[in-house]
Amino acid sequence: MSIGNVIQLAWHGTFLLALGCSSDHSNELITQLEDADVQVRRAAVRTLREHQGERVIAALGGAIEDTDTEVRRLAIHALGIQNRSRLLKCRVLRRRYKTINC
Image (cartoon, rainbow, N blue to C red):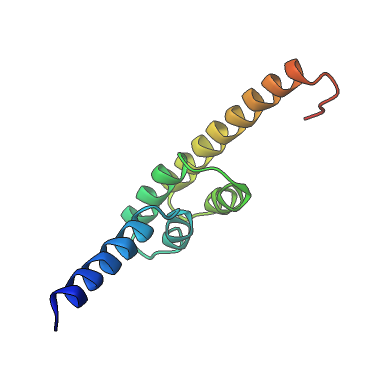
């Protein structure tokens, strides 16, 4: 293998690594909400409270039905954080554009 091929291979590997590191992990966390291990589900809910989006809100809503009390509590708290974030954005938009209804 020539040095040029090694450099090209290393560059492609670095690019793919960076691409993977910058991706949104919401899908993985949402999947972890179904894990049999309660510690995994709790960690997923704790991390999801920092993520945004309709899929995250729907997944947290589903976590309210979890068999573990702590997962349910964390999900309710995370939904409260999501709601506050939405309300804040709505208030900012209302001040700027008087016709916005949230």
